[in-house]
Length: 460
Image: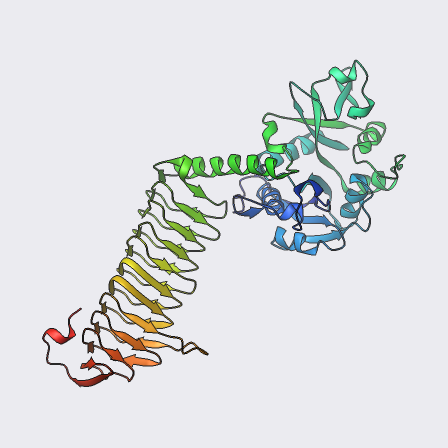
């Protein structure tokens, strides 16, 4: 979910996200920036934070084969290709060269899924207020091992000293560089182009701090929570980021009026929306592009993936995928909604009901042990236990149509393609291979139609 824009819009500012790294410590064929945290790829989290902070453009620096990374950043993100892996400075130069007429560039890494819009907006405000050449983000830590140290002279930034270059004095500095920079675009392009390669041939982004000190004013923004900028480099760090992100999501929902009975066993993806006064019972999973209305009750052990649910929906320990539920739907335990299903208002699915690519009309009741696939079921239909729409003939799928007010008896087999008319009935155990006209009764194996005079043969 993109964080809501609650900060000043900066349409002429561009965020350059460095995401060309191979991420070899992940031991994966998937680019590191595409590994999900709470169901959303890391690069999308970073891009969403930048959008939430008000930045008008997103540029994602990728390797020559990394176009999907930029596409995943979403909402018009632009790809900049780093042709060779020649260091962070080289990657930043590729990004800065693609920002067009942006006034200010923000450089950040694509493996910072916990970074928030609030932090980016605060750093941007500091940079704008100071009218600085360069602003970079720092943090105070107890153990600075592995980080570049912020070397100051009379309180002003002098340089960043990399770990390998520290001496007894600089090694004891606890203020570290976290790798997030803001700079005036024209100056930045020139500074990056002027970087001298290291002995190994790489260009280091940290060297622009020295260049900025020589050019003008360098400002810093002190980060209160270092956890926001912890990079994800391997699967252990990925799991840690996942745990932090899911805690954030649950706390945000609870503060917005959602009851979560057991937060530790409840999993909600970052892309999910939940309305107020909804209750999530233990073991519930809300995944993907799921949106749940208000006053719902889900679980225990409900799994909803890519589901849209209206208000006052009740779902037991069932699995719902790619489906839409209107208001006041009730789904009991052990049901399975497969993608493409639409459940209209006031529908009741009891237990052990499977629905696949079907529309179930308002007020319809499917009590238990039934399969409805590739069907359109009208309003106020009763489907008895054991009913099956036989939609597949071994080669093709066929449709079943059931009209409003129909009554399908227990253990009915509807062999598609077949149409059961409005207010028609099928007897218990009927095998329906021909259309049933409105108001008539199908009875037998195979079923034959006759006028429906009521009585036991049609009861479910």
